[in-house]
Length: 247
Image (cartoon, rainbow, N blue to C red):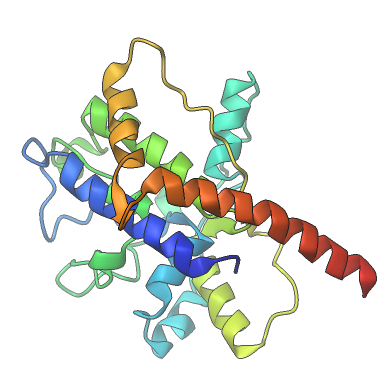
């Protein structure tokens, strides 16, 4: 719960930047095209918190009955494992067991579209997924999506990562006082600032640079607010530890 409102400013700024910076002209995606909208939906606790107020009470009864995959690593843990030459564990949830996302309406429209998580926002295709059987994103869109997933986890410093449905249920239970500890299937976010960009890949460097320079508050850029958030977390962590050992 560390500085949620400050994190939300960064998250909304990132969403706005993504919407304005990437062209959709070459994409097949359109309202009602929901082939990629399944129960495989991973997010940070920050993204889930942003959605929480839009979720009706009866929805929680529905998701508690669902089965869905859970990540074994956070996105940044996955990036780090590849960077260090490791072999990440494979997911063992069969793709054939995935079901349509419960946020879809009867018209196959997203009921939380304006607040949908980043994983949904970057899932795009140049061709009809229902015909070819898979998403076919432009290379630039795909790479930028990976970079932004890394940044969103960095933003949610001290937060959690997991299935969006687990995270929503966690926030709901936390609000009602019905939870005493973090469930083992929710993972701790880690910071990974080393981006998988080669020196000659100037387009990606430019994309990130423009995000960092985006003004989110008067006189304050995305980078300014992010640096302040990280610096504050160091002090927050020390104070939390001191409180814990003194009790």
